[in-house]
Amino acid sequence: MVYTVLLPAAGSGKRMGAGQNKLFLELRKVPILIHTLRAFEQDQKCQEIVLAVKKEEQAFIEKLLAEHQITKVVAITEGGAERQHSVYACLKASPSKGILLVHDAARPFIRQEVIHRLVQVAEEFGAAVAAVRAKDTMKKVENGIIQETVDRDSLWIIQTPQAFKYDVLEQAERLAEKEGFLGTDEAMLVERLGEHVHIVESTYDNVKMTTQEDLLFGEVILTKREQEEQ
Ligand SMILES: Nc1ccn([C@@H]2O[C@H](COP(=O)(O)OP(=O)(O)OP(=O)(O)O)[C@@H](O)[C@H]2O)c(=O)n1
Ligand SMILES: C[C@](O)(CO)[C@H](O)COP(=O)(O)O
Image (cartoon, rainbow, N blue to C red; front, side, top):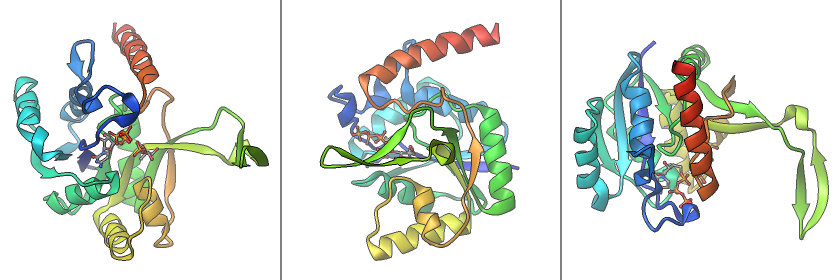
């Protein structure tokens, strides 16, 4: 049940407003990118990691990898204008044709038990994504006016990792590129093939570091994790 991680890390962090790639911001004096990489470096079932980065940031990232003894990165490729392009670049650079796990480098708190369940379900069914149940009421809105309240019991908040058999993801990415389709996650591309994508329940602390508030959550999550380990 081994897997390869495709890790897009070539974003600009605009919503974070830090004026730099948010993955270089530190939580407990460690860059967000390293926190995320450690989750996979420390997982025996993770065979290798493929990174997509901005060309101008590659040398700095390679320095970070050496400084923090991250040894599983087997390829570093250039990311693209959109997250989807960066993921596809990772896939093209991946040596593995087995189970691929796409994970946002901006989600440093992924738990191993969720990763392993995702790999298991992807091995059996071909595609699986991490998700948590919606806690808030969700409504469709047009021009500031509520159109419809969506049944909350059927709503899930989709995260990463998203795990796939190589052929499923490769076919989905290739078709999306051919048709110029842009999705916000890989599951969207696989759904377009008519494939079933399974849900694996994740944890609410698998937060994507997107805006300044998330950094506060991140510090609290790290404190809680340290207490769990004591
Ligand atoms: N062209 C892009 C855009 C995003 N990402 C990566 O995809 C993950 C999730 O994207 P997001 O949280 O949107 O990161 P940013 O695009 O950097 O954020 P923003 O949209 O606020 O600029 C991040 O690890 C980011 O580095 C990427 O590799 N290539
Ligand atoms: C892939 C994702 O994390 C699933 O929730 C999300 O769609 C990424 O969105 P972003 O705007 O590219 O961060």
